[in-house]
Length: 302
Image (tube, rainbow, N blue to C red; front, side, top):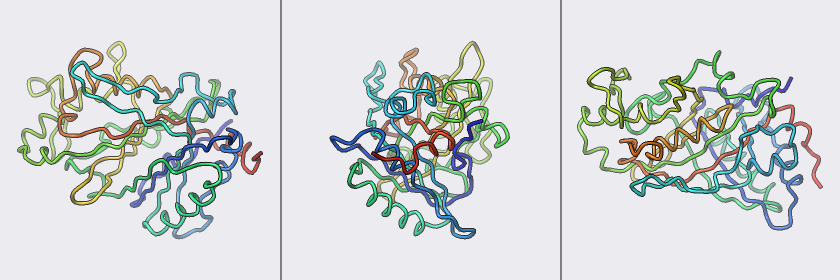
C-alpha cells in the first residue's frame, strides 16, 4: 500500500510558503527528484512544520512511470475563454509547500531549501500565505465550504490502490489577484456573483441561483453528478496587492481541468462571474507522489 503525503490533509496551520523551482540545464530528472525527495519537515513535537513535495508530471513519469497517475500532464498551454479571458500557464518543475503555526518556521526552512536546491534548480516563484478569519478568503466569504470531510477527502484527492500512481495526488496550483472593484459591490451583488450568502455560506437555490455564479461554475459535473476536489486555499499579499493561492488536490486531473474550463466559459460560453473581479496570475499542475514512492528516491542523487 502506498501512503499519501500527510501534509495534504494537515489543517490548522496559520503560515504557508509555496516555492516553485525550474531545473537547471544539464541536471538529470533523477537528481532533481532525489534531492527534493530528501527534504523533510523538522522532527519536533512543538513548532513543527508540514511539508508537501510535488513535481512536473512529465518529470515524475520519466523517473517513476509505475507511480504516475494516468492523466497527469503539465499546465503547458493557457486556457482561453471565448471572450479572451485567459488563465496563464506557468508550469515549473518542482513545487514545495511548507505550513506551520508561525512564519519564522517556514521562513527558516524555505531559506534552507532554496540553498540546497541552488546547484540544480532556480527559484521560479514564491508565495506566502496566511489565515484570514479562520477559514475565509479575502473576498470575505467562507472558503472550501464544499470540501469533503477529512474522512472522505482521501477518496477524493488520492489515487486509489490498484490504479497507476496509487497514493499520489494531482495538484492544481494557481495564484489569483483580487481586484479593488470587488469592494465596490454591495453584499447582495457579491453574494450573487459568488452564488451563496456571505454571512453563513448558504448556497442559493431556485430563482436566486444563477448560471454564472462562482458556485455554479467552479465545479466538474459529469452526467449530472458533481465530482469533488479537495481545496487547501489560503490568502496571500498585503493591504494593496492581495488575493488567493488556489491549492486544489484531486485523484483525477480531468476534474481540475474541466473546472477551469467551465470557469473560463470554454464549455458553453458562460464565464464565472467571480473572474470579473479576480485575475489569474499563474497556473501549474504537479504530481504529489506517495510517501512510499518518494522514499525510493531520497538521497539517491546522481
